[in-house]
Length: 310
Image (cartoon, rainbow, N blue to C red; front, side):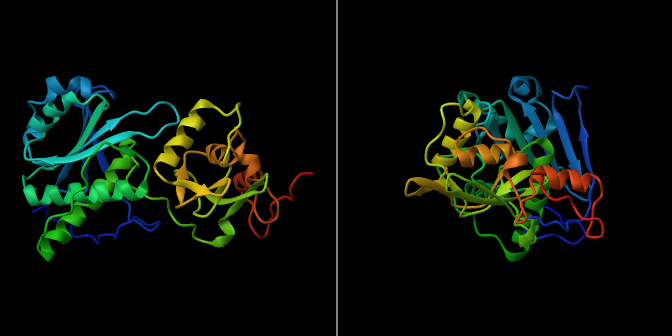
């Protein structure tokens, strides 16, 4: 079974108090667009990122002959959500070759153990957990037709495999895959900003990934003809994923949701293109732009932020 490092394991989901760690990415082809082998300090696992175009050439490598869990990733049209398929297999090479019949994916990300300690039950458990997390986060379109329940493991095995999963989740954002993480919670209510327009009210806050709109925020039921195509695609994806649900003539966010920028969030809410740095304001009427500029100057309570411009 996967061995655990001696350090303290954090609980899912990750918090702002995670300990620092080292990730090593090796490029055996000598190019950033080629195969990537990923290792983490104090971890027996190994991650691999393989472009689809290189699968035939690379599938004879030892990493592809192990038991593991994989994620097929399809790059979306600009603004849309990625499509993913999560699975497990006794041999990565065989399963990825079988998945060549699927058209949507352009890269595979998979995880194995360097010491061969992952067995069939472990990867079944990892598959089920990853699918559950993806379904809850709603940040990708799932290609999977079935959502299996995790197999029964002993208490000790489950603790170890949960630790292995935590390490997987710490590696995935480094390779640009954030689809398994729900939006973080605002640490303090005073961090929340508000967007008000045309009778709508939405609240959100800045995060390292972008901008989080909180559950219960309203969004326009109709869109403007001038709304960018990428916003239209993302908005429809969010409706299809039931992140945005009907509430009379408007829409409402059913959960906290992370956008890549405050302007994307503002555009989805208002139904038209918008400058989020101006649209989002704190409870004193200061825009996000003004708050960011004040932070850049190092303002603090002893050096108050400027009042909003008139």
